[in-house]
Length: 227
Ligand code: SAM
Image (cartoon, rainbow, N blue to C red; front, side):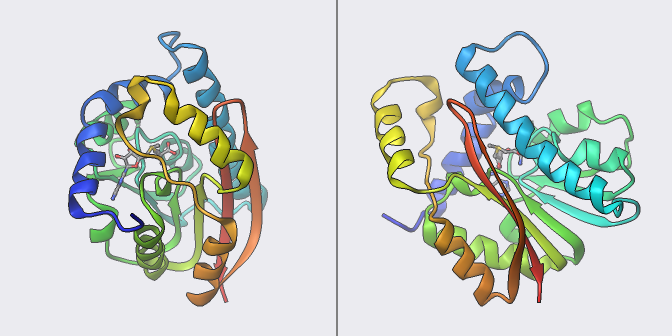
């Protein structure tokens, strides 16, 4: 099916509060308590985070910019972004992920962390960021989520997602056949052309993009600016 039921969202939340939390807290950490696959994913994810941080660095506009990091996980992006001077509001549907993010941050006031479904976010931010979250949702849900995130963005929306093309569809099929703890949630790939169409419809233009691919991690990163 292409539409996730509220139950699917509960499954994602429960996963990131239990086995998913344990797995991703380690992947998004620095410890040696990861296997080869997890280490590869750690490297790939860090690349995506670094691309975003470098956009801020090169533009020299992090200071005092307001940023909403939706689905912030353990704060991999939010914490360094706050250290660069941005005012970061970091939220996640999983209280465990948010708790871990809080414990990793040095400044108790920035980022401001909150447990929240991104569909329930409100307010206006210079930049809204949502990294590696859409992989948990099918097309229609993703479209609704992108539209909501766009409504919070004064000038810019930064998204990353696992791109759908014949090669990755095949990779995913093979991966799905291999049993393992990471299979607790479904992974959804998204066509870049679909994401671009949604953004255009919302009045955004893609300004920069990047792609990260390691052996087990692949993510298309897009910066879209309001027309
Ligand atoms: N964005 C972070 C990063 O790149 O380091 C975390 C990525 S992790 C693969 C996906 C995160 O999305 C999890 O922390 C999960 O709890 C969160 N998430 C999933 N569905 C969400 C929703 N509807 N609203 C907010 N967060 C959500």
